Length: 316
Image (cartoon, rainbow, N blue to C red; front, side, top):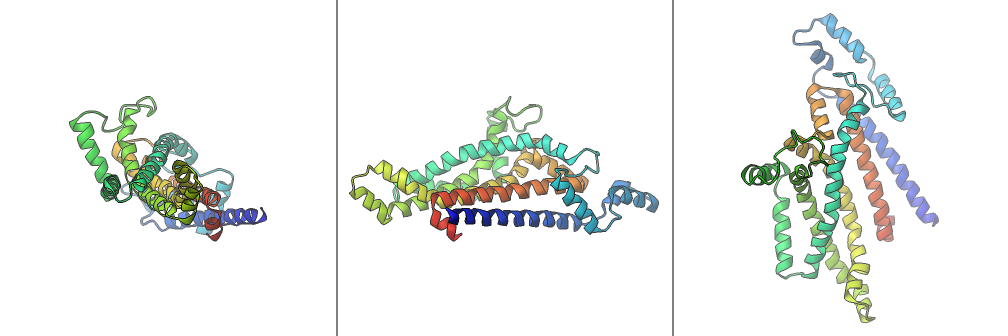
C-alpha cells in the first residue's frame, strides 16, 4: 500500500511539473509569434502615437516577466484574461465552445472503446484466418487516410451525393437537437483511433492467449470465454489504455480540423478565429486548457494501467 501511495505521489508531482512546463511553453510560444499585435489592432495606416497607446492599453510595453507573473497569478485564480478584440473574458469563449467540443469528444470516445476493443478481440480470436486478415487490412487502409481527406470524401458521398446527412452544422442550432449533424464528424474522428486501438488490442490479446498462464487456466478446466475476457483481455488492455490516452490527446487536435470542416462552433473554431485575429489571451487560454487536459488524461491512463498491470505501471 505504501508503494502504491508513493507511486501516486510521484505521478502527481510529475503532473504538477508538466503543468508548469505547459504554462511556460504556451507563454514563450505566444511571445515568439511574428508581427506586432499593437500594429495589427491600430489599423491599416497607424501612426506611432496610436501604436504606443494600443501597446500601453494591451500591456505590451511592460517586460515579459511581469506579464508572465500577472498571467500565472490570474490562472491560479481562474482568470484566463480578457480578449483583445471583444473585451470579453477568455473564460466566456471557453464556455461558449466547450459544449460542442465536449459532445464530439464524448461521443467519439464512447464509440471508440467498444468498437476498437471489439475489433481487436475479434481479430485475435481468428488469428491468421479471413476475419483477421480483413480487419487488419481494413484498419491499415483507413489509418493511412488523412482526416481532412476522409472528411471531404464523406461529405462528397454521404452529404452531397446521397443526401443522407447534412454537410455542415450551419443553421441547425444545438447539436443534440439534430444528431444527424454529428454522424460525419464523429466518423472522421473515429476512423484512425479505432484502427490503432484495434491493432494494439489484437496484438495484446494474441500475446496474452499464448502466455503460459492462459494454458494453465485451460488445463484447470476454466471456460474459454472466462480465460479470454477475465484473464487475457485485462493484460491486453494495459498497453491499450496508454494508447487510448494518446488517442484522446489526438482528439483535441483532430477536433480543430473537424470543426473547421463541418463549421461546428466548438473550441477548435474559437482557436482558429483567435489565431486569425491575433487575440493572444484567447490563444493562450485555449492552449493551457488543451495542455492541462493532456496532462490529466495521461495521469488517469497511468493509474488505470497500474490497476490492470501493476508491475508495468511501477516500472513506468
